[in-house]
Image 1: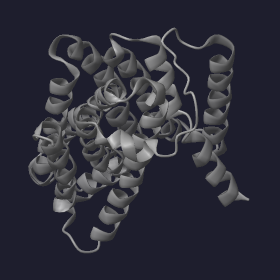
Image 2: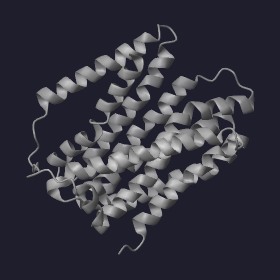
Image 3: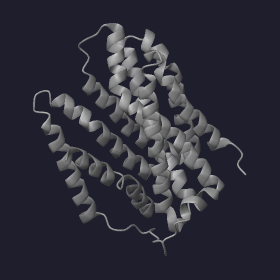
Image 4: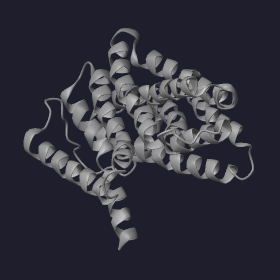
Length: 291
């Protein structure tokens, strides 16, 4: 029963993100990066919220975490159903086209944006999943036993919501591609520097480093989605966003499983350097000359 419930939760959650981006794209022809910045920013805060509730639930039974997020999900669904009609730029698909999964990648701009997003996804969710591990590892290395891991995990992830909004506004002036590339490059740099901060940084400096990493690791996400939406054929924009999201989240499974396996092989301080492969490949695809 528990496994079935978890499967169904994941199944229905998977339908929210790409559809939400499609709805945003239906409302904004210009300024899509800014609107997706708010959308993804809300997703980031929602992703971080269970960590805060876990920290808060030290006073209450753990079931309160499940009850709280379940009620919030129901309220969110009702608000969408009752208050959000179709946007003015919505163009429904005329017919089911199963070949769209392949033909959409023939467009050069779409392919560059999609593979940039794939590189970003290699790092993002693995970093989020291992934030408590990073904090615990720091505590072990520094012989600290009083660091509130759940509290800081919430802020390290949630601050990315602010970064998404700021990145959306910056993209209005600098462009989505350049802004996304800068964020992706900085997050890759954090991957490379992680052994240095794990080994030598004091606790305040290490937390500041993780807060900065938490910002740049997600700031590019709405911008890549913007580039994907703008380079996809209008009539299959929703399909294109869904395809890219599906592949991106499949990549996160590989990344998570790889790091989980490497824990028994690689010195923990150097474990997160492998995540730089995502930003490196993403940037290469974003700027390479494509045929």
